[in-house]
Image (tube, rainbow, N blue to C red; front, side, top):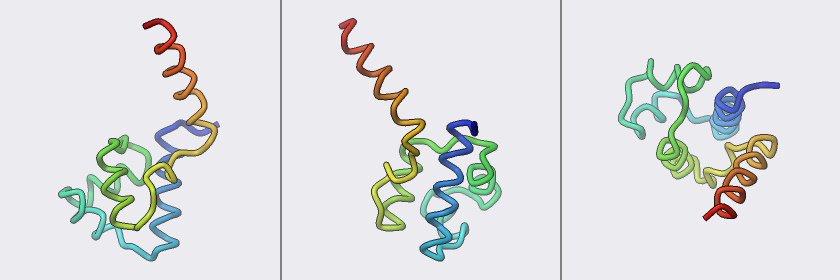
Length: 86
């Protein structure tokens, strides 16, 4: 199973391809150089929540689209467990 970082990167790459949005546009929107964006798109560096929000706005999609169902359930479970302890 791919890591969360790899899965998110794959979803972002797929959406960029669907929208025919070049990485240079992502770099400009994020205020990063192309090599930093490349590291994120290749799964070598994690996207931040802010990165995903900006990319979502750029592409006109909800940032949650980049999260696969396999990785959302454990996060929701962890949040529920934390809330139960409070």
